[in-house]
Image (tube, rainbow over all chains, first blue to last red; front, side, top):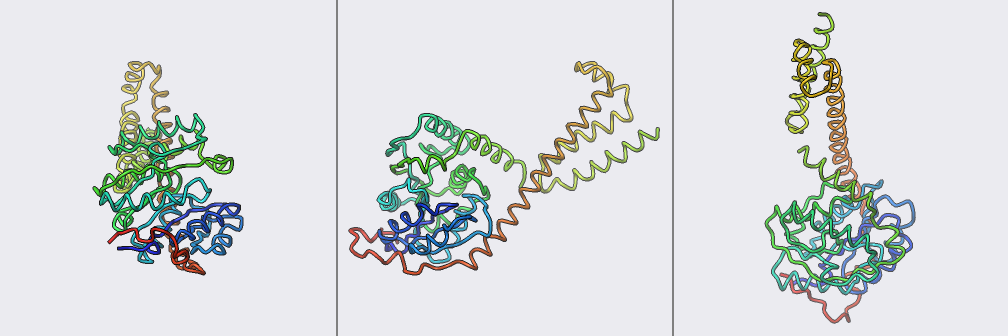
Length: 227
Length: 125
């Protein structure tokens, strides 16, 4: 049996000083261990996160969210984490969803519990972004064979064994598809759980655009060309 | 004849380069090999390039060779892009190792703060 202190919540952050303290404090108050990966921020993200109680791993320069998540997973595994949760720094995830996902992980005897806003709620989700996410879901279903409903959700829980099976090589946003292809390759059991994504003006401004979606497709294509 | 020998040496160099790249990127290597081999063939059989050019509607054989050269350049550019990505992976590994070595542990163990939380055991063995 693992206590919440053995659940490590990995929060990748890039220039998130205005919000990261609140997010770290909320997650910490719920009893989880928090590690913030400061991805070469130019503001005071690292200091703010550390002051709020998180362990902080700082990239010397900006590498991308995929790279930050992998760094956080490596850190958590080295700290003997039993469960690892990935969580966004911009305040759009609910702390209460962490326990829902970890409980789902246990109940279903799975190695991955993937958050889905389409099984849960996503108030204020702009129609264009909804369409983009739906298209990404269709693409990922076709390329990985996983019947997931939400492919670009940053809230995931995984066992230690599941985390060890993941090795993200897509530094930028294409890592979301890479997670799913590696889960499919690993053969480990995955489930989806409902989560709520609360869009705010801040999180929408930091979100992805259609241009990013094109870059993600190019990244995924390029990755297939070399070993 | 001098031009034919010069182009042959250049294209043969590209063929060797493509072969050496096969282990890292088979797709790029095969594409490069195909295009460079076609170039070599047409350098020595220019009349065939004209016939093929006419057959596919390009017009002159020399234009066909020009197009092949452009294709070759684009493939080499793609290969350079892939090499840069490989370099980035190495840089990432180095930066990650450095970052993990300098990690700042939590000042207070965040995981042990709120002991009044209703469900502290996630029940994982």
